[in-house]
Every structure is written in C-alpha cells, then in structure tokens.
Length: 172
Image (cartoon, rainbow, N blue to C red; front, side, top):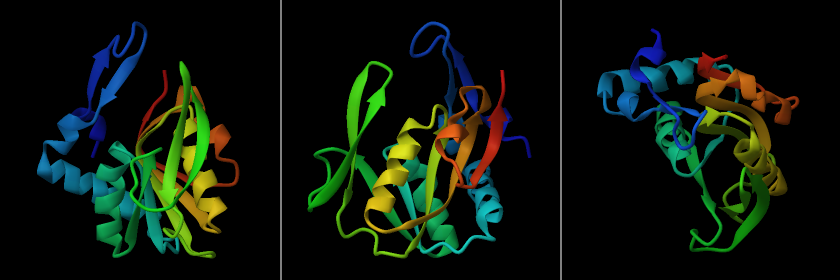
C-alpha cells in the first residue's frame, strides 16, 4: 500500500518553502492507521524489543499502538517539566532556539532493548536526543521506526549504527 495517498501535503507550512506532511488524514482513517501500524510491526519484527519509547506528541500516536501490537511497554519522552516523577533531561537545538526532552529516571532498566518510534525523521535532532536519553539509563537502542522519512534532510546521519525503518520516503 502506498501510504502517501493518505498523507496530506501542505505547502508553505509552517513557513514559506516548507512542505508539511500532515499525518492526521492517515490517523482519521481507522483501517489505514491500523495497516500502517501493522506494517511497522512487520518491519521491526526481527528485532528483540523490550520497550518502545516515543517523543511527544506524534511519537505517542505511533509508538503506543506499535508497543500494543508487539506486546511490549511504552515509554513517553516529554518536553521538560511535563513528567510528574524524577526525570533525566537532554537539551537539543531547534531551528530557532533550544529545547529539552525528558524521561522518567526509572523508565528503562539497564540492558533493556528499546525501539524509538516517531511520526517523522527529518533532521534527526529529536530522535538523536531520544537515543541519548535511552542510553543514559543504560538502555540498548535496537532501532528507530517512523511513518515518514524526509531523505533530503539526512536525519539518518545522526543515527550511526542504528537501524532505521520508515514506511514512506520523501526525497525531493
């Protein structure tokens, strides 16, 4: 199935020259959403996965159902100040500033195999920061999974030695 048929492309959003990939049209179609999660499950089925971690917010709508489908737990990665328990944090650069991601300090046990899932791999900043968080807790990142990969932005370069699985590729 070509999932691009269910992803709306919005030109010049959020700024001129950007072609935004809107997954809400895929999420609105229960059958296609289920098929996308099932296909991601097949792509990662050869990995030994104990947990899936996903950065907010769209990483939740990919990672949580994928964790459910695989019968493993889900770990939310949130922006700083959003988790109620003791956390670890890592800062990262945004296009126009800086931000921080956080994870509960007891979310991952040393040696657990973790797949990181999100909706989109672009420049790799959010995902490489997520990898840093998992590794700080002693987790082993066994791969990353995405609905969409923007090949031109070369996010894979920030994920050396980590398998990357993507359903849809856009290469302009």
